[in-house]
Length: 119
Image (cartoon, rainbow, N blue to C red):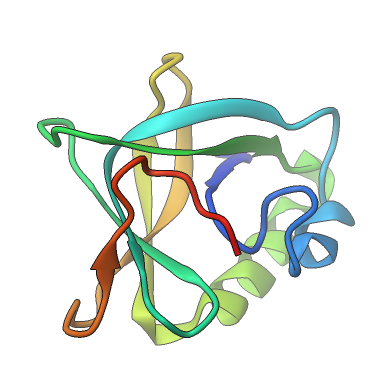
């Protein structure tokens, strides 16, 4: 799978976009995934996902250059670290993508009601 859904610091214009931009192919597409977005209080968000979630996490789908996908995904995994797990999800537009779900405790995290990260 070479498409990634990003919703925080990795979105175009976000402070970490340069970490993903070099691997991207084409224009990022606005989309959303069923889930819940949280403010960690550390300058980056957390999201939990589930098809039965009442809300949406808003972000963008970025196509990764297939020729460099393995290296790109390995680097993204390292960037996201142990607080996140790479999972497969289906977006509201029907795209099958991977994203990073928060797996650390949510203590101290505050829900972002509209599901849109603003740094």
